[in-house]
Length: 320
Ligand code: FAD
Image 1 (cartoon, rainbow, N blue to C red):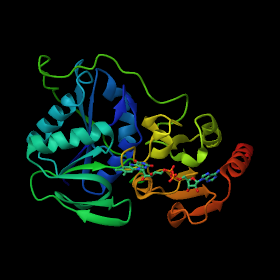
Image 2: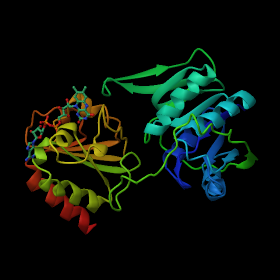
Image 3: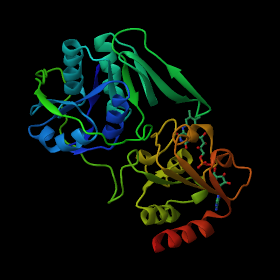
């Protein structure tokens, strides 16, 4: 069976659930090999969960520099593995970092790049990416014609499932970074607020739009999110109006989310917003305008004032 490389997405050894989705997708193509790039001891922490989702091999690329130079060490490690192992494909998360890794890796290895896939099909190096385009209006399938297919996969796009793998370790070198040329990270502050899950990782997202009306009133969105244990999102109009910080924007120029449940409060459903949430499994919309386009894609719609509906939902969810 062909080997498929999966770049493990983690923050200081804390694994992101998109990694399990990538491993599940890789299993449909061949034998998944997880690539852990991190500081010393990272792979040992992750090995058990990587094995649970079918990693047959774990490439351990650890060094003090591994997390200190933006994405450069990850690209270096993956490029070396592509050259030495000739994998059938490389899968990375379509996160901000992952997209950069994928683009650089494709350029470095002279390979084709398939971006933002919501699924993969095929076997061996005959890889087809399934992509949702034009704000979810079309689903297309595409293939590369040169090199090793490099695929970035949208978090939440693939449903993860467990399957035991051997997780046999192989230590690989992290090529030394030329500190004079590279950009070194001098400090990092997490941008996630409180105990809420990270937006792209959350299985439930509650988003507010311009209809919320002000930053102060956005707590109606936060309260419902907290009742669900969900992440909070916002439309661009809400962000541009100063209701909520930009890192929570969902849409074409914001984050792409694909949760089990997406609740849109006071969001009209412009195509640019839909582009970032259309592949959510279940969509619930609350809008006082029955003609709002969000209702075209909603599984459940409530025509009403969000300030009357959302608190009732919050109470109801809180009781369960
Ligand atoms: P509006 O369109 O103003 O809708 C507000 C809705 O709230 C209305 O439907 C109204 O009926 C409803 N409402 C008002 N009061 C209440 C109430 N009390 N109860 C219930 N409902 C109420 N947008 C994004 O979201 N994400 C992006 O990434 C993004 N990228 C863009 C990129 C480009 C290049 C461009 C041109 C635009 C982009 N936009 C993006 C903007 C997008 O076109 C819309 O303008 C934006 O999504 C609208 O946000 P909204 O739905 O919150 O506001």
